[in-house]
Amino acid sequence: MTGTLIVERLTVHYGGVSAVRDLSFEVAAGDAVGVIGANGAGKTSTLKAVMGLIPRKVGVLRFGDVDLSGVSARDMVRHGIGYVPEGRHIFAGLPVEKNLLLGAYARKWNAETRTTLDEVYELFPVLAEMRDRLAGALSGGQQQMLAIGRALMSRPQLLLLDEPSMGLSPKLVGDILAVLLRLRAEGLSLLLVEQNAKLTFEATSSCLVVENGEVAMTGASERLRHDPRVRRIYLGL
Ligand code: ATP
Image (cartoon, rainbow, N blue to C red; front, side, top):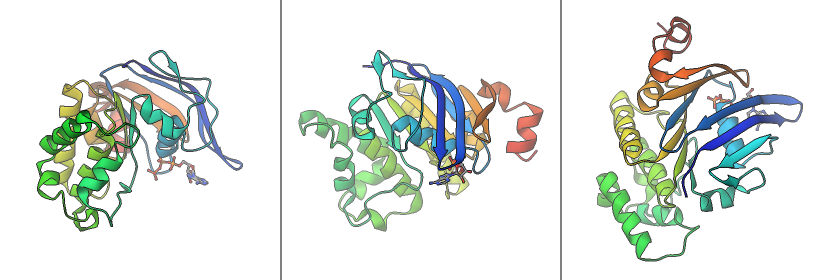
């Protein structure tokens, strides 16, 4: 199954604090959409709410023909949605390969699992080299690759990524960009939440700029990266 993700009127509250207000956007099949905004703008809450990881109210949440508004986070994976959490959340005490196989938990082990594992190793040769090492022994960049690889093990059609560049050197941010562009070229849809606006503009075709839980601007990434207001606020130019 593949299709367009449609999110309409998404709202998140933490107690009395409203973190996301009536946010609406779409990710067309095969498209890559970015969400940028300052610290605390509501980016992570948006992603977690789409994934069903936190309580939210939503008018419409559909992926292709499927209504996801009542679907639990666990079942989102079965509907073709993968999630790479902020901070990676790998299992440091388990070997790299075991971490990857845990990403396939929603599917029965079969020949396809082996093929998917081989594809992930092909995408990230360093993970193949380190397959028997404990994940906690990997560098930050390698752990981010592992988090992405683990999400790919469920063979998603849409991948939600929360700040994959966080804490990485410019060289490693470049490696992440290359991976995202390759996944896009292979037809995967992406929803990318980032503080790194430059990476986001390069990896996506359109973006939402979120401020105080609301959409402040939307548009083609190429246009937004040249917008004077965006350049001033998000690129420090
Ligand atoms: P960051 O880049 O720092 O992760 P963000 O744009 O992802 O920021 P969110 O983490 O979604 O923003 O936070 C949005 C708002 O909700 C902020 O005001 C934040 O303080 C608040 N918030 C987030 N998580 C919680 C929580 N568990 N309890 C209470 N308030 C929260």
